[in-house]
Amino acid sequence: MFPEYRQVNRLVYDLQTHIFPSLGSYRLGHDKIEMTRAFWALCPQHVPHSAILPATPSSIDQVLDDFTHPFVAKEVRNAMRRGVHLIESRSDFAVYCQNNDILYVQEYL
Image 1 (cartoon, one colour):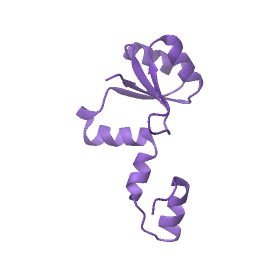
Image 2 (cartoon, rainbow, N blue to C red):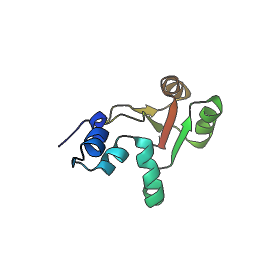
Image 3 (cartoon, rainbow, N blue to C red):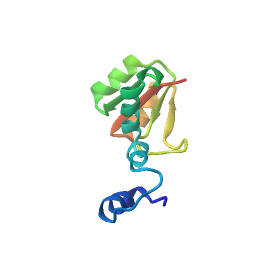
């Protein structure tokens, strides 16, 4: 089965159905923050410099102090290159911040 994310709990817990990909894949793969935290725990040396912060004025200042342009800002729940923003200026970052409650920022590789 390839269930949609909204179907996973009902299939696994209510109907006790086996799903593919695994439950762990759904849990980690559905959310970039959870995936990044898992990578930080398992292999932090292989994770690009990243920040996960609330979109508050102090967090915005922190990102602008910690990251040099260009850097990448991502939407937490998006895939296949959608929701990935190349931030080349303060104004680019301001637009991203207006549209996201959580700042998910990584160095540009």
